[in-house]
Structures are given as structure tokens and as C-alpha cells.
Image (cartoon, rainbow, N blue to C red):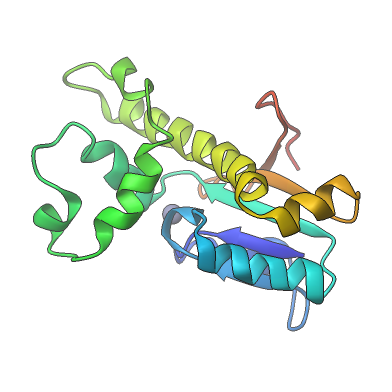
Length: 175
Ligand SMILES: [Zn+2]
């Protein structure tokens, strides 16, 4: 398996799935987004090393997604607000999954409301990344079409420890 997951300290895929050394190819980047280098790593894991499953795993209460939502309506960029020079590269990418969703936020959202929006954007982000992996990698798309691999999205709940697998219509089963 190739797993694309967030850098969050609460989401080590090996521990979540009770796996050990030699079990998975683990790609970790804040907000579990894709890029040419992520695709190259995934292509190697699937096409060369023979992994049969690529899992894109987002999680609830994600800091990267929270930043993306927070800075969406802000006059400051993430870099200006945090002093992290390159943070906008990640935040701007995740913001593409937030279109239309933050309009559901009232001007003074309750913390529950804000958390729900962040989790909804995190979920949408996983679905978008799954789609973009196939759009951007002929290698991985070809393997899917040949039924040699599956690319699946999932959400990990950092509070309950539950995993929900996401299918095309956004509904999935919880394990
Ligand atoms: Zn995260």
C-alpha cells in the first residue's frame, strides 16, 4: 500500500492500521495534498514496487486545513500571519477544496460550527486529491484502468480513532 497522509503527529498511518516495518510506502505532507514529487513517489510505489492500493488519508481537526479556512477571508497571507515563508503553497492548494463551503460560516461561528467546516473541507480535500492523482498521473490512471491498483480516499477521526472510507458519492463505511 502507498499512503498519502498529513504530517500531523496524531496520524501515523503505520500505527493507525497496525502495520510495521516493510509494510507500506508512506508519503506525508501537511494537508495530504499532491504535487509532482508526491506523484513521483506514488508512481514508484505502485508501478515499480507493486503496491496494489493507494490510500489518501485526511483527518479531522487538521491544522493545515484550519489555516486554509482561516486565511481564506483574511487580508494577510499565511506567510505574513505566521512567518512561515512557504506555507501559502500548501494553504492555497487546500483552499481550492473550500470553495462555497466557507460561505456556510456565520460571521461569528461557534467553535463547533468552525470545526465542522474544517472537517468538511478536509473531506472535500481528500476527494479532490484522489481525483487529481488520476488526472495528473498517466502512470497511476493507467494502473487504475488496468485494475492493477485502486486509489481510495479516507478520513481518520483523531478523536474517536475511527476511519471512514470515502467513495465517489461521499458516503463510506466506518471501520
Ligand atoms: Zn493535518
